[in-house]
Length: 459
Image (tube, rainbow, N blue to C red; front, side):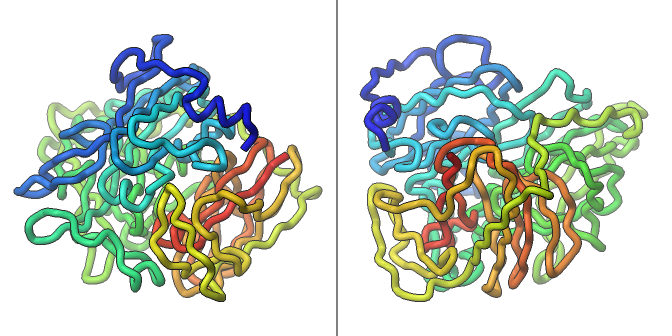
């Protein structure tokens, strides 16, 4: 990291705490004040201690921004562990990406950092720490971030939903957040599934109204296979970007697979009869599991999905496949016991996983890029999973289009996370349009923190 960049990101340039928390669109010059802190909340009958949030007694808020409007947030760390804040899926300047050692120094207790960027894209995104990641995410620090556009079609209700697990014992307190066995396989699953920090919540929706249903998988491990049988609706966005290729409705015959880090926006027409319910469920061993219910209330609005205008496209660079260069990346188990570097941001103490058969040693200090991409060049990334486990592969700072797979048909919709199935090879296309060092990793956090991560340099 250059000295100039270090001064700008370490707090030595002189920061001040101005203003307070605002969850809506930002219309002030002072930054939004976000405090990472310990929390206490009743996920079950007994409150769970030692959680991590932006409030002492509530989930992380949904942040709403406006496309093309500057956003500034000053993040204060009050924990006794290091942290940082990553804005997942947003295309922003590299120095604002929130990845320690690649884009900033980690925040120690009492440190502040001002994130200052203008969102280019409208859609559903999210935020989470990228230092001490496993512990802080598993204990609650994942929140939705919505970028709105004045061209968005008007819905009768906009409902964001944060899907995630918790690992709690019978006393509702945290148990081990991961196991070595889980980290070496599909990850360690939680004991309690929630939507917006609630178990099987019921949300009232206007009868006969149109609902924008924003679902984000912010869990450290779980891959969702979503179903919404009997609902009248359509998939309108993936990973924040409007759908180009149609996507099948998530029903029992074709569950919608949503890996860690991925998002989907559904346009739903609520039932016209008051009291009627729609159920979102997860297809899993033992049968479908209810995640939440939507209950129609009030008189039938008689609104029609056909009246909805399509979402406006985001300004994304179209790949030139005729001029594309191919880069190969292999994801699998680590071929050896690579050294573990705990650093400031922690590791899990194991090196189970690798990219191109090299395990990430821990913090980024002293490591080089996995590949160097030329600014403006189109690339096809050939992602080969040689393991029997799924890997949601996330690239920071840019988006890509899936082209083909050896296992299934894939839709050519813009995404920032590729759900790579066991022993699948998928090719995706992108334009390297954003200069900087961009993290590239599996979003099963146990995989990420045991070797399956690296970064790509665009210059």
